[in-house]
Length: 151
Image (cartoon, rainbow, N blue to C red; front, side, top):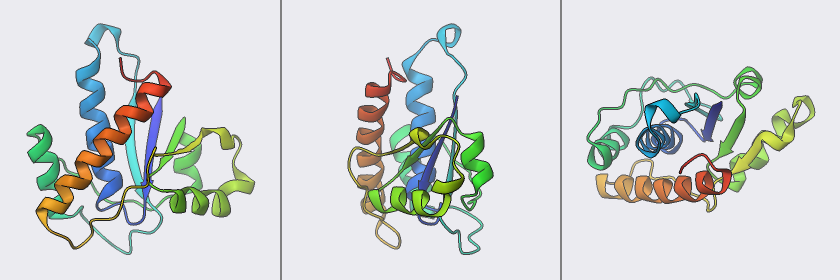
């Protein structure tokens, strides 16, 4: 199953969600019991960004002790089509996806949103990114618990 997280530029929230989901899932089930899950992320528009925010990397390192590398990518119909579940970081992102891609989506039921909108920490302090990452982690645990992805 492929899960795609979507935010504005794919430099802060959605790549942190991708890294967090990957870590939570890896820790939640034994290797032999794991169905194949793949996590990815994209932004409504990357505006030419070539890397995620430095403070996003620091937040992931602070939470999980891992270095996370990601190249931002713009959301496309192809990315949506290849995904089994598309998770918008906020209601605004969900609305955008439905407006831009809704008519061409084969299955709109694959779209969902985080339990609570996650504010954008772009340009803020390292502490703000860490708080954002913790909020994302709580949201993913809630959402994945409801979907039966985390045990």
